[in-house]
Image (cartoon, rainbow, N blue to C red):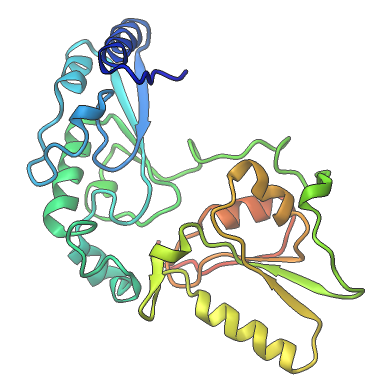
Length: 263
C-alpha cells in the first residue's frame, strides 16, 4: 500500500483513513524505525529527548490494540554508555561522538517510549540490555526470518548477476550496507579492515582467493551474489549476527561471524 500523494491534503487524508481502518480491523500492529512511533510522518522525531508517545499510538492503546516492534541496532533504545560499558563496541563506531545520531538522552528517551507502549519487541539479533531484558523482549527468531523459497542453496542466478571466476578461485563475500557513512576515520563497526587485510595476506601467499564486497545492493538482488560465494564473512566486532550471517546460512554457505558468549 502506497499512501503517498504529492498533494499534502490528499496525503493527510490517506493517512487518516489508513489509521482509522487499521485501528478498527486489527488487534495488533507492528512497526520498525527509531523515533518513528506514529503513522503520521509529521509526528516523527518530534520528541527525541522527551519520550512522549504520539496521539495516534495513544489512541491505539486506548482501543486495546497491541503494539509490536522490531529493533534496528544497538542504539535502538539502549543508552550509549550502557553499550560502551558492556561491550566496548562504541570506540569502533562512527556514531560514538555524534549525539545527533546516538546519545544517552535520545536513546534512553526512545527506550522508555518502547517500554511504555510496546507489548512485544523483537530483538533476536542484537544486544539485550536495559529495556530489552524485560518481559516484552523476544529473543528467538520471529520477525527477522527468511523465506526458504527465496533463500535456498539451489537458487538460479539471473545472467545479469553472474560473477565470473577463474578455475579454482575461492570467492569470499563481506557486504557492508551504507559503508560510506558507517566506516571512516579508522572506525569500522564490522571489522572490515581485518577481513580485507586477511584476504590480501592469503593472496600474497599464493592462494586463489578473491573478496567480493558489494554495498547498497537491494535485498531482492543480494541473494544472487551471496549464493555464488564460497564463504560468507559477516561482522567481527559487534558480537551478534546480522543479515549477512542469516542469509549466508540459509543459502548453505560456511559463514563466519563473532558471537559474544555473554549473549
